[in-house]
Image 1 (cartoon, one colour):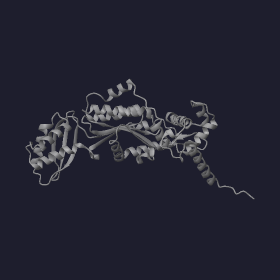
Image 2: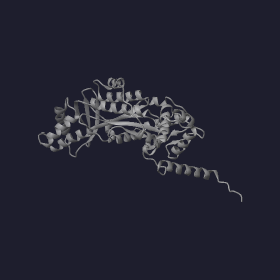
Image 3: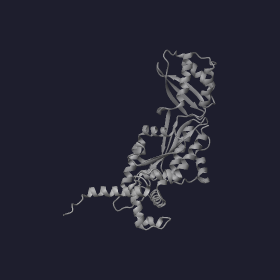
Image 4: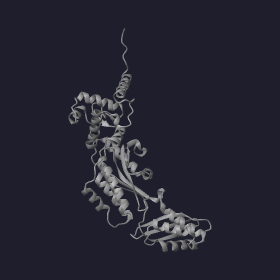
Length: 378
């Protein structure tokens, strides 16, 4: 009887299923890995070497080179068998038919969560960070310096999102725009000027804005906004403020405008996009960077993403398609929140770059810079 040939597509599907079944037998699962502890020692060593080679060079690595680099003696054939299992688990892939292997985004996440060994900043690096963003300067200058610093140290784009902050206040004024709106103009001791638009209560007499301005200026000079807000709230709650009810509402609304939480109360600083053009290895890399530039231009989306990170403790890492914003450009974001002296989170800072980031070096760098910036916002 003649043997019926199997269509190539069907055979490939069977081969893939067979590989998954073998992986399940080897790792005790049905091809779904949640932690690196589910990998045996040999698989972890090969997986680690593939990822570290990618992070170092951006190049795929084959079984022959891997067999020479591993801390154990394995033949290229044995390495290929393990690589097939790792590929079936979705941790690595072949960019070309005859190429070596690269980590997938899922593989990178597994590596960062379970195998990454964080470095520590050297004394020289700490001194450099402190020298660049330390000293007496305005808040806006601090944020810009922090973004430029992270960009320079990481050779990626540095980003900082923060509430519009003035450190210590010199003067505040309510300026009428129309019957329903006023602008609050705030002048810092460092010369920084910020303004916000405030909705006014119905029936507000023209004199109320002048009265609110005089009341706040008598209490705000030389103080932080947090100190002023606390002082005024105490007076209003204790009925010690000599203000009528409508004017008191204007004062409270004016102070509330500076507590943040809305996009128009935040400023975004991005520096060092040109670094993303360094070390491009192929046409597809250039296309990836072009897409990333488009992402960075969508500042509203970037601000929403960074706002999510404000609610985290410590450093957060987004890899590639884990975040919809970077799903096309294949980029990673490493960010950490920073707080003011009242332990209130006022912003986030970090680094945006390709998925081939030096995570071990950049994570502690972002963490240290965030903690230092928080101490400087006094």
